[in-house]
Image 1 (cartoon, rainbow, N blue to C red):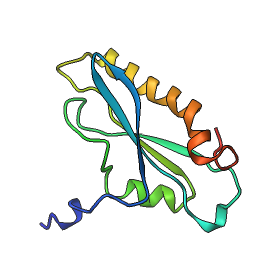
Image 2: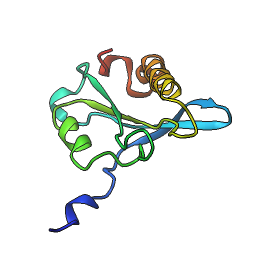
Image 3: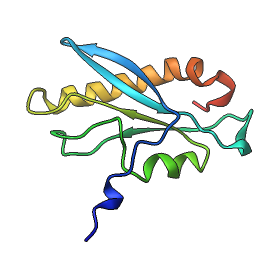
Image 4: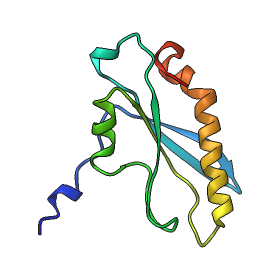
Length: 120
């Protein structure tokens, strides 16, 4: 069995942002804007990717190798978020992190991506 497919580099063209700070921990997210020439000037949907790992491991900065290319090719903006991990926090804290990221996106994505290029 080859592991070559599991070590793909991070897709280019992203920007990094901090969506919140909780108990001194900065919570980042990474945005890949939709780049297809088919949708220039049209509002595009966005996907908030929440990494797996059983809430105890995982990273936001390199989603599964297929996530970003698959959704960008269908004219989606992709937002990959970080959240605090167990056992340092509870599942309720993790849910709060995810809802904070979603609220941040609703407020800030129009400014970052252009209000006419995002469907909220």
